[in-house]
Image (cartoon, rainbow, N blue to C red; front, side):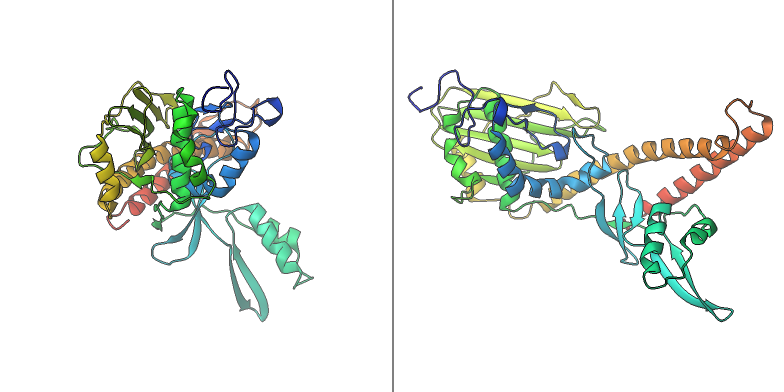
Length: 385
């Protein structure tokens, strides 16, 4: 062991100091997988501590960033971003925005009416599976309901999305801040920083001690400037023994920016580590954020916190949302083409050659779907949205 109690040459969990072996090894994402983070290590946390932190606070950060991950169609190691629960801005009806931004009613619409002296139901569902589920539920109250007949009589139609939807882009709170602090600790140790300098933050992560170590940071001169069309995650850790400070900076989606005080009595070596990951191309970029604070500046940023950084956040959020629109359009146009081909060519045998009539039908199907799509997009991009 060294003078600080760490086993020399051994890989130990920086939280509980347990040796990390095959039976308790855990792959820890340095930036959350929910945000599309790909940088990871199995030499940071044991399985139990990783699971504990994931349940206690990583889930809060994942929930807060899910909207951007969804709208940008972020690829993750496991699973897809969850649908966004939202409301139609005009009708206030509940909706979900599926991956790629497609709006889906949160619940099917059931209209009851009478015709020719008989009680009837008009059901609108977004899929055959949902319609069947509704019918099975209704059959409990109406045993004579013919589910098979109703499914055969159902008609599929294309519906233009002519609404805008409210999305909650807020982020913050102590649980989110703890997740940010953990990511900075992960990155520092991953870059060969000594665990002893971040050990005082462990009680904070475990909820045993409240500490003022994380806050939003939006200076007048941006620390990192993304290229046009770029959406990236940014990490930077600086250790300055002359100023006796160790601190980190983090951007998620170039939108949510945080400063983290890792140690205010730092006496290690000069330390400077950077990481920039472009989430759309899924590539690490050779770019460096610019940040060099004095002890007095770091202290002042936490002592006199920017209480309302919302204008800066809104500008950054709007930029990324515009990029997300382009990502979604490209995705949706690909789906439209696939569905049009399936609709027309799926009705003819594979070995049958394409005749002029079939090609004409295919062109008309694609043209109708594309026109409907762009008309919908113009309405959704109204100035009020």
